[in-house]
Length: 189
Image (tube, rainbow, N blue to C red; front, side, top):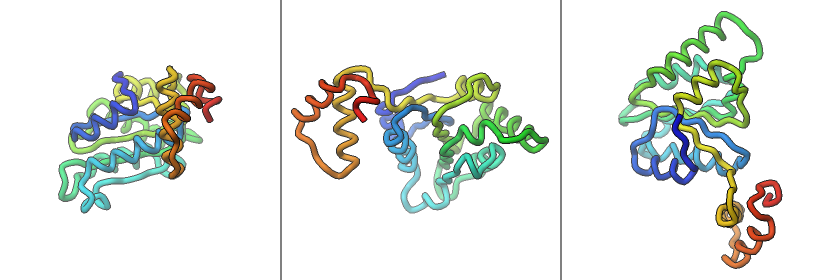
């Protein structure tokens, strides 16, 4: 298991040398979306339509995810597959032979991911008792969003949140809000 902060993940994306599998977790939906969307920057804008695939856990199976990552990139060196609400695909609604085959294919993919693809799984919460989840945690680069451990983190969170609303805040005001709320995400919200 390799763990990165959201900023470290963005720096790694910017360097153009991403890991094969990322698991984005946390309470801050805005930050999770920012990090997941940044993965599109790995692929040149002109060929993103062919090489960036966005899936949703409610509609896609793990078999669909593996198939999307195995597809070769078109006119690019890398393909990016983003699965939002991945917890819905990781915990199927009912057991069947197809679901079992998909889980086995996904487990095999985690052991030997494609060199030409980056898989990004965005989750709200995971059932950490399941074998597939344990294997995912062991093999993925984990990015935890919404972690506010200090007043400085809280100030950065306030500035990012305000900027997302297309308004501005004075640095002193951001410091004051962070100091009053402290490093508690629920109070900052």
